[in-house]
Image (cartoon, rainbow, N blue to C red; front, side):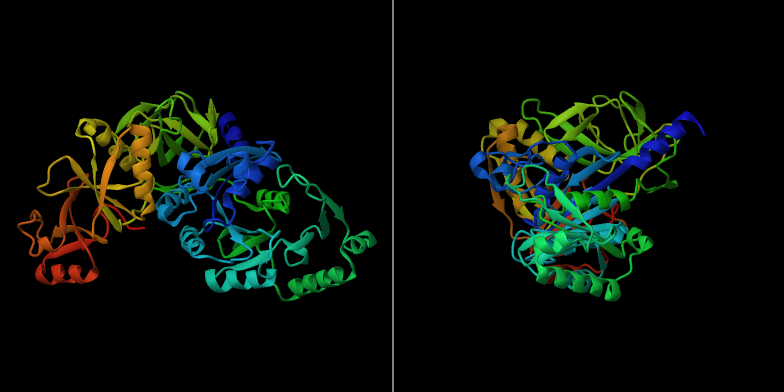
Length: 541
């Protein structure tokens, strides 16, 4: 075994890379904070709710996120705990940003699903769960907000199974009555963990007192009735519940489930330790050259996110790279698949939200932010020039909302174009040009309406451009081609005036129409026309 091979082996075993998925407001960002708190990365966790103190979540950096208490971009955080190096990708909770979340899920090896005990499985959770299921990645469940009244633990288990179609195995079980839980029973170690009173409102790590299940002190602290109810629950789980099966966990068929409250640190450490023990280390990835194993000594990775202006003072732009194989070294030269050029990877950074540090080395599973002068695009592969290949393409989401956007002040055309181009490269919006229209306005397509708010906000704050935005009455976009390969133009298309004829950034013809009925008319009247939800060279999400 070579020295590099040994080093890779050791580092890969330490890595855990996961994304947190949930419906907005289930407490995802709070849980992220608390994991960092236990990892020693932050000494005082900032609660999103405490507006009075104006301390915001460590992982939310854009001003609009701080104002609204939502995450609209995926942030990347890294910390060490119990000999492991953990990379967390916090994803946007808001459904309008499911595209960003989808890309993030391409860069992880497992996912943590956060469920609000009162609300159960919500719409956005279902959507994101489906993506994880398609990729067959292990899913760990954290049932949150146990400091509030909510559904019974057994009902939550039932809901996960009926709504998501995945069986669950509770790793711990709450002790106490609805909303007034005193601790958890750890099923694996057969121990009772009772929590010390929380006087810091969740700002400091919470200590648990550990007991044997039949210790008289437990009955004394929780009361005879609660103790008896716990015995009955455990017996029921052991006899009628799922058996624990690591193979099923790894293939995404069984989810280990933890109960707790991120707000008060109840059960968070329990969850973190269980996760580290069971979660997969970095996995092989599919490429044009077959599966690439993480311990392959030749370096490779892919870009899953581009983010501009994370630091307004520097007007910088970062490409986030998931390292898939080999060892990353600062200033190394790699082959950039899309351009076919050799590029040098300078100024690599790792993150704790806004705090970054320049790093010299990184390993498979790690996420590195690279300064990007404008060469990277989402989904780009970078690899060792002695082994050239391409990682599988990212799927695309068809846009559903459209607006005509132009700069209020024509003198600011240059900044306007730069800002729009930038946001398109980040994958936040899709850009179209109307056939026959001038260059002063664009048609912007998005998956949800909140993206228009972010577009307007960022153009003003980062590029100093005020825009006028007119929403368009279209909800369906179709890429067009004739079966015989002749050019699709507005004149060659019958009924092109029933929608808007536009070109995408690569000059491909696209028709925007207001509904499926109008689309049916176009299809009937142009029998040799092929219509596609996404560009012909890409696959749909």
